[in-house]
Length: 401
Image 1: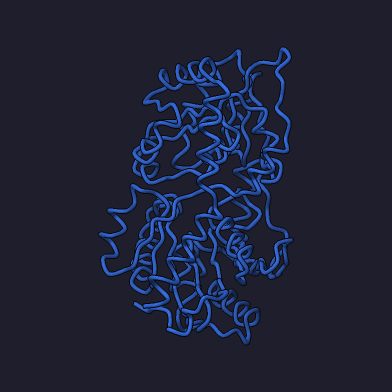
Image 2: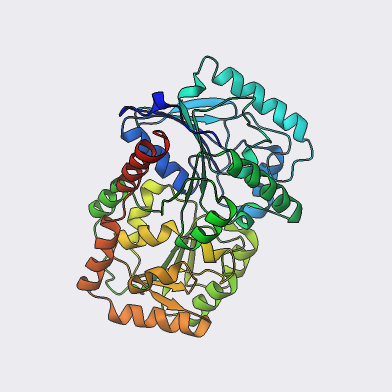
């Protein structure tokens, strides 16, 4: 296991190199939030998006509606946050998960990486790897040798896999990455036992999800929506496909709550869109930029987390929990092991009947006092505080080792 050299211990700014799970402008993920806060604290941040691919773009085009596709390839661009640069690698033939041309994909990416980061002193870099398939597939210590390698675990590996072969490759890559990493961070309490069992010799840090102070301020600037005869609104923010989203539960909610309006925000699977088309009380807003989410939250009367209850969701600490709480919204969710840790904040249901009943209960019991309780939770779980704690842990426990 490689640890940071002593010359990185000084109380100074660091250079972070993030290897992301997705594009920077996709649905908000913890990787973007951590990168943004590191930059706002004065650290230099280079964020490398997952490489776009011909196969990936075709999959999104034919299976989703309202799903933004990256038009740029091989570019670097600055965002409005000082010290933060976003890098979009060149388009690869088949990409990460189901690559049929791994040698070609690898060669294209590595050539681009060497040119983009020519002259960088990697011994001064903290590399944050958010997806195991980066390691030994596209990057390794032959390509660059960082001062500290960090593996951040945001979900179970099954979320990132499309088939059994991809899952096998993910597990192999994770074992190699975990063996090399100087620090492993993880997002859910339910992950801790597994993380410490898989990587018994690694330094591990519980780094749960949170919400940005900027998002809290945006919500505060949005006026409350007054019903004035409009039906009550049930809102959901997130993807509508995957191994965690309970399609049948949401469709049943739409049917059983015909007197309410259901607003769904996020990339939409075409089959789900077709199923929703028969119901007049649902609106599919599609992809909405994070800057515009606050206005939608102000229109919700209750927010939902309609998870399947399985081994994947057992380990999910959803970002939407924190975003919903900023607006003080009552939250109805499927009971999972991880969400049970936040039972005091929400209504937890175990089946369709109790889910719908909980929505009715949440609407009837909502009050300014309950909303303030949820809002207070959000205010004490910010990315600013999380990243301060993360940097403090690096300086005290890891880089000083």
